Length: 187
Image (tube, rainbow, N blue to C red; front, side, top):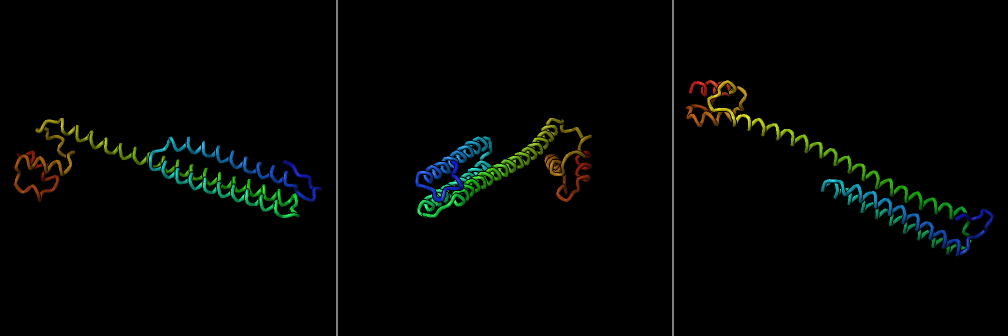
C-alpha cells in the first residue's frame, strides 16, 4: 500500500490495510520458514532434530513477538492523530526487519544444527570403522589354527595371556609380550 507524502494524516481505513498487510507478510514468512525447517528437521538424527526443534520454537517465539509488536505499533499509530507517512514507513520497515532477523536467526540455527548432525555422523562412522576393523582382526585370529605360531607377534598381549592360561604356562602374569610369545612357542 502506498501512502502519499502529501497526505497529512492516515485515515483508519489506510491504517487497517497497512496493519493487515504487515500481518499477512509476517504470516507468509513464518509459514515458509516453518515449512523449510520441518523439511530439514525430518532428515536429521534424533539429537540434532531435537536441537533444531528448540531453535524453531525460539524462532516462532521471536516471529510471534515481532508480529505482536508490529500489530501493537499499528494500533498505537491509529490512536495518535498526527501520525505521518514517515512513522508508518518506519514501522513497516521495523516489522520487515524484525521478520528478516527472526528468519535469519532460524536459518543460522538450522545450518548450525545440520553442521552438528554432519559432524556427529562423521564421528559415528569413524567409530564404526574402528570397531569393524577390530572385529575383523578378532575374526581372523579366531579362524587361525592354535598351532599357527608364526603370527603370535601380531596378537595383543591380552590374547597371548589368554592363550598362556589355556596352556597353563607358569609365571605368565609377570611376562612381557615377547616373553609370552616365547613361552607359548615353547609349550
